[in-house]
Length: 282
Image 1 (spheres, helix red, strand yellow):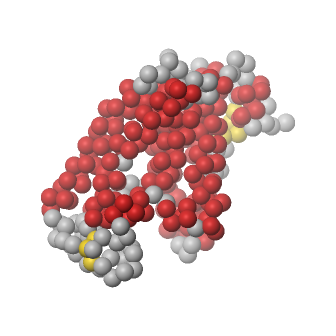
Image 2: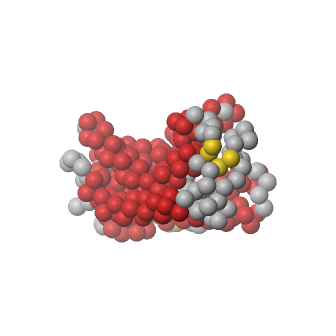
Image 3: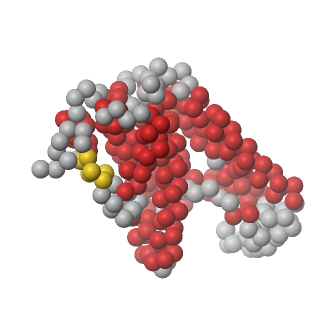
């Protein structure tokens, strides 16, 4: 009889504790780790944030008001405000991040560490288990993996097809999202192992879901943020126009992207462990 990975680790796995899963009882440390991880994600998305702000400021006149426009550009405000999307919002920004972090990070690490897997090994191939889906046998702490065709994020592909995209376009989009998920998975593994807090990883996951894929549309010559490009605003429907984007703005956005990425790579390990006595890296 087969059982879930959660049951194998928590019920059958000897020596597995809530602290090992990242659910220690030090609320103050959870808060510190959460703030640190959210700051790291903001640093990683510095270029994305800067591009969103620049895109809103490039509209002439600003519409809607600046703060509201920036929030709508960077966060899923319209989705949250739409009553028909309430179940999608709860899934994407609450239930899914929490469940995925507990099962595919916390419980997975408790299980892998019991088998002698090193932290660097978990960071390297742990996200792949999440990508294809993991099934555990009834034997304690043994499992087999079964490719499940984007099992973890298949719903994104189905939603794209329902939205009118062809199978090829939907598959390409799903592949990009899967690659992005793998990268974030590696980052989340570092955050969990350094902070020892599954709540901090969940908060970082929620923020990443809100931001979505990094906005690199400014690299296109059709973008209003590309040097000397201007045109009608298609985002708000009020007939305003984009102003001309100077070359200095284009260079600044590239610089912010690169600076944010380099700074994140340097800071992620020490900052995610800020003040934590629950590091599981050892």
